[in-house]
Image (tube, rainbow, N blue to C red):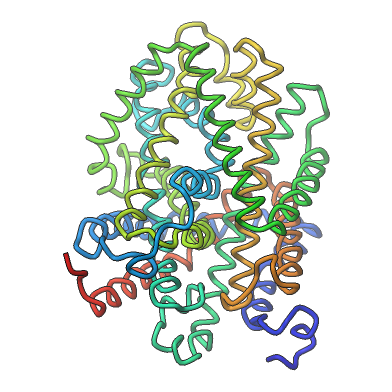
Length: 512
């Protein structure tokens, strides 16, 4: 392997099979989308229809299993096992850890959907009449379900095995090493099936990340158009992607402790500022009531919503919304899980699971009930016309709502900075993880020459694919990409849980 030309150019740690195989899976999408966007749209649409109609049960049941398994491990005696040596302390403070995991795990998606989704379901609920107090209540229950513990439990299903085998067992941080730990100890985990598994991890990561990159680019374009009158359309969106691509590659090259950590803390600070502004200047009483009711409805409704393949008795809605979200979280799981694992050395399994599953979910719900609750209140009480704006352009929901608040210019600037910062932190985290997967977990960071080259290569490819998907079909193409990318990785995640559980049983329960 080390005698190959590509290895000589990039570095001795490069896993040529994983790197080449992953590139072969991804590059044709870029080329086909650039040369024949209509054909790519048609092919992707056919694949989407097949997966959502024939395999929706797999997405829905698998994500439930991830949540149950994660909680069972956390609450069992195995929850006391530390991800590292028994006396090892966490590498990052709670604040830095939360900021980085939240920025990688939600980021652009939350800013995009925190207003758009509640407004959409308020106007067009899966059951009952739209634009009523009842549909508003239902909208926030739906949002909590989609952005709550199911999302973060999916990340745990990948992140926990990676952290355990990497820091507890001393294996390189790849998915294949978690599935075949015995072979990895003898230097054989990355052969055959192991290489295919790591390729699928890269494939799912790429397809999931470009979905959020595209959403962020669409929203920034909308913000620039509505706030400062710049032209909209794919040309501006492509320019936005180009600029942000350069920025997130630069951030990834600076490493976790510098660029990614600092930007993640900045993200949380921006979100808290925006949240506090809406709490102070928005309908405070309505927001607080909405938050309480949403949490109550979410808690009481989580079991019935999780045990049906047709939520609210509407199978078509379930396939286009909940199945899409579960597929999106699965597509994000390889990179978010790997990144969370990287920053979680020294924490116990219990701290990892409960911290990852509940803290970001609660913050996401609070953020949406403040912003999305204000938008719904504007519709209910003032007839602001936001539903019409959302029906024409989902990406315009945030800025259309901000236009009804005081200090619009300041808010628009803050919102654009927040979206751009989330854009950068999501993409640079993903670029770093994909680069590590490409080297068998041995390198891929900016500290090595080969890591820097891989970061640049994968960073450019992510930006290019985001441009292609916007060009070939906009938001629908992005959603399609995430579902297609997630499908094969579902089976890998189920195997990861089995492998982790088996290894924990072999290690034995820690002494009290």
